[in-house]
Every structure is written in C-alpha cells, then in structure tokens.
Amino acid sequence: MNVRAQWIAFNAILWKEILRFSRIWVQTILPPMITTLLYYVIFGKLIGKQIGEVSGFAYIDYIVPGLILMAVITNSYGNVVASFYSSKFQRSIEEMLVSPLPNYLIVLGFVGGGVARGIAVSIAVMTVTVLFTSIAFHSIWIVISVLLLTSVLFSLGGLINAIYAKSFDDITVVPTFVLTPLTYLGGVFYSVQMLPPFWQKLSLANPILYMVNAFRYGLLGVSDVNVGTAFAAIFLFIAALAWFALYLLGRGHGVRS
Image (cartoon, rainbow, N blue to C red; front, side):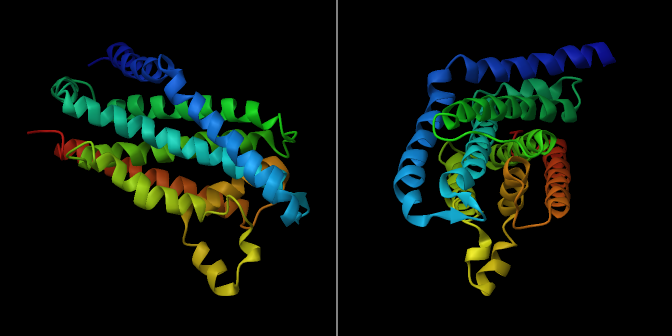
C-alpha cells in the first residue's frame, strides 16, 4: 500500500470520527459545557467563597484548569471507546483489518478523532469559563501541549478498553470505576499540599495528577509537581499504551472471531 493510499485511508477514518461527534454536537459538545457551568456555580461561586484562596489564587480560578482537563479526558476517552466498539459490534472493523491498511494508521485514525473531540470540548468549556473568570495563560505552549498529549493518552486508553470490551456494558466499567475516581482524586478541586504527608505521597501514584498540574502551570504558573516530570510521565504512558494497542491489534485480540 503506497503512501498516497495510506494517507487517503487515514483521512477517511479521521473524518468519519470527526463527523461522527460533530453531527450530534448537542449530545457531545453541549453536555460538557453545561456540566462545567454547574461546577463553576456550585464549587466556584458558592463553595469557593467559603474556601478562599488556594496557592495564591481565588478558588474558582484555581479549579479552572482541572475542570477543563477533566472534560477533555472524559470526552477523548468516551469518543474512541464508543466508536471503536461500535465498529466491532457492526463488524466493520474486520474490513480494516483484512485490508492492506497498517494497524498504526487505524490507531492514528481513531485516536485523531478522540483528540479532535477533546480539543473541541476544551474550546467549548473555555467559552463557558470566560463567563466566570478570565483565563490568563502563563505559557500558551504548555497549555496546548498538555491538551494534545492528554487527549492522545486517553484516546489510546479508550481504544484499548474497546478492544477488550465484549458488550456495551464493558465500555462503561473503566470510566466509572477507574477513570472517574482517578480524575476527582487528581487535584482538580484541591492542591495536594493541603493533604496530610501520607496522602500527598499516595497521590503521586495518580497519573492524572501530573496532567492536571502541568495544565495548571500552563494557565496559572503554579504546580504541585515538577512540570518536567509531568511531561515525562505523560510521554511514558502514551508510549506504553500506543505499543499495547498496536500489539493487541496485531494479535487480533478481541477484534477477530
């Protein structure tokens, strides 16, 4: 399969994924905006006044990075896990696997769709954010980098979940029992410096903590962890999940009868 044919195939998968969520934007883009709006009203305006400042910032400003990234994580993951499993259920993924299309392009196509939805949701959530607080970019490049890398990471996670899933119920297990707890305990609503020493150390085992803090540094210039360490952790997880996804597709695990 020549380069031009591969490029056409990749674009076909990517645009299918983008059109899939953009056509139903009321179900894919609007809900994160409403959810974030509720977070701002409840935690930012009502509870935030009682908490005061965190790391030198008003509480509502402090939670902004975490809320944006939480929406990106959920939607990047959800887009790929639902789309890839639907392809398995409809048996259309088998057509891709028997074609000359390399497995890495299949992965890139689905992941690209997850990244596109993650970025679209981040822009939508930021639009809501300006109604409650002003966004001051400490480092726009770190903000963009963390958004893209986080979208890639959780899109890969969604792909692996979909490969293993044997029913529609299986695609909700990881988001419910793993992703949601890790996200809420990843420093979205608090600084780990507020925790007792034991829980501070335990929190360092949460990978989402590094992403939230790197993103917070990009927006506010403060972080509970070293930003270089955070980026290293993100790259390491991406490499591991990408290799594992390609390995599973190569073996045909969960996608070949």
